Image (tube, rainbow, N blue to C red; front, side, top):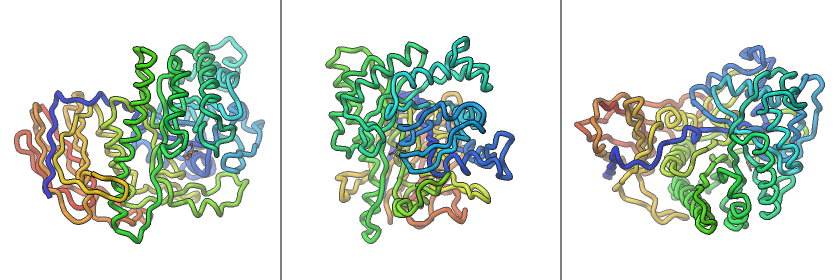
Length: 501
Ligand code: AHR
């Protein structure tokens, strides 16, 4: 099968906001306890942070991390996580029915996120709490000093303000599972009033309002309109969440359908952009609301196991999906979709980062191991920088149970002027045929291929539990002037990096 790509240096989708490669740590399962924080682990540093985990995260080059939830957020009192550890209360976490010891809290998160080189994306509880607790948290974090809360921060060790820029106004408040779930108008009013108060404390912050927690929620659409209508002037981003899940393994055509889920993601994004812009027009506003896709991933493998977990444990094994090769292909394709929409998607958070539906797993009494999905994410977050170029693609498409027209070749090219390089990410979704790939890179002065890799040769259901997965060299790749040719193997994820003069 032939697959043709044309890009032009001047045909730019957008400058990629590096925060599109963000991730998420929730106080859930073993994300924190025995994940990133385990004082008795041999690799723990003096703060109790696992250095083997930090090393793995560094490879992923994650610029932004959302915290502390998630569903956990909606019943959380941030004050529980500050001050001397021995004085912190142990609480019931009603979201996940766990015991929360609060041994890891705000200061620990701030210190840890610095160690992994990420900025915080902090969230305020709008489930059981509201305006005052949120404004207090901004004061505690961002006010320089001389007030009760900012002095308390100093007393507890942080002389300088944290200067947290990005804040989420609650989590999934449209979801009936959420503690303190709201109707659209209840949430819109609370979010707007909270935004106003938070901005009074610090007018440099950016705010993300909750959009729908899934496109499948019955209130999708109405929710966005109501929230945008009331909050438009006081927010900067609207959030989207999407997880892709189970399919019937006995039917081989279902893999085609699963790998086509990026089409769904694209429709979701474009739908929410349209809603933002409709409200903008109706309000005759000059302001554009961008998107924060602050939870996305594959999530289903752990569903059965999770129903059997005994409640009220500290750090239980929850949401520990073990990802396989087909999941990695879908994650790669979802990343390409985010980049294709990088004119409006400015923040993205792979949910989550460690142990909980995560690319990085820990053995409590052992080492870190990397999931299949680690590899495409690592490549895109490291090399998908600069600008995203519009992909003009000519390739056959297929139809599947849910989608009419899925291109067999999914691809995006990014160009970094600073790094003098461009990177092509290309996925072949065909289960049986290779793609004869040809790409014209117009208006570039291509120099040479720096690196070409393929993630290929694994069974769709194969996982990386034994650590055998690796990126292999893509051998049949050539650069001739500004044209690249390559053979993309059936079911493969590929990256070609080229230096430009
Ligand atoms: O990421 C796991 C959960 O998924 C989060 O807690 C919640 O926001 C979403 O439903």
